Image (tube, rainbow, N blue to C red; front, side):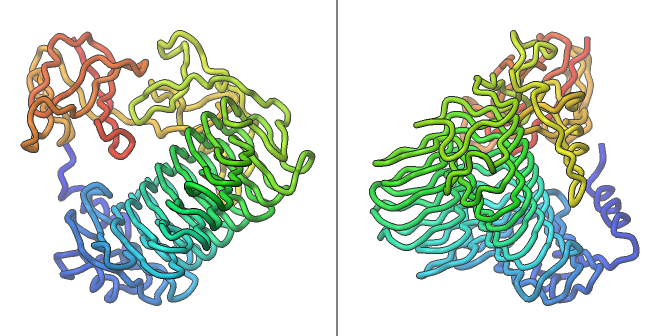
Length: 492
């Protein structure tokens, strides 16, 4: 077991000779820690809830890092303003925010910008949860407003929104609005919205509005939406592309929606014909209204011969899969055969991992070739679409790839054995999950086999694994993708 004190020592060693300011040890608040930091310093924050509205100092090269990760380290705006402002000047990638929940930012007014984060330049955001932030009125970026070329990787961007119940005006980027060539990879955009209850207005990009020639690579877009009950124009339920040269590859778009009088591109809307969209899975997205078009991919003006649209699986979208563009070489329109895996619902079926059939998306992708600013082929081959978490090998699988998981626990059934992580706790063949006073009948999660099939429902308190057959399993929390899954080996 790696104790927390050891983890902190490793983090300190990782930053070399740079200064480390500990919160709350050296500084009572995160803001004071940032104010006292210089280029090269790390502000290292202990777990806890911090009710702060942060203003980043006008110095580049500061790293804001949590000790225990996003779930245990919360920065809340308490619905009284923006959580994090980083617009003193154009920061570089030496400036980083890693391992925080950034939540309950709220901006109210006629034109708002980024209730969770407003950043300038190319700072880096990794392993954060940017959730439940809201612009109340018109504006740009319910969760994030970015000017420049930031990098967002391994973040959960969920339940952020722009609402304007009176109707009219514009709401662009329910989750993120990026005004520049930003890079977005390995993020989950979940249930973000730019939506009104009355008619009129313009709604673009429920999950992400990308206004530059950036990269959208290996993200998962699920149930994002834009529009209103009546009237207005809604483009890009999940993703709106507003500039030439955008590169969109190996993402999965499921059940995104745009609905109003003129909705188009429930998954992807491109306002420019010269973009690349390849190796994506785009299924069950819906555009609905008086004149809906392009439930899957839509482009305006029409780009029948200029939009690169290769090796995508575009299937079962309403009212049609393509509008203003058409499938390119090696395109599919087939059920991708999703299965449940250790970290979510969108792994691909593989006979090799115990499923009955293999998804048509397996080995159906094209090479990505890009090496700057990211080596995309290398990154995708380090990840997995398989429920046994083996990395993608050979030809690239289409769609979103999950991160493989390392072994986190071993239990011998029925022989006594303890695991090497704090949660779940495993003693003498019993799996102990925390109780919170809500009652033992509440579902805490599920034990899944290597094929993604449910073996048993887990409850708070003691769960008896002594009769579980030896093998490899995954423990999936009832909160699903917002918590990491754990790999479990049961031995005789």
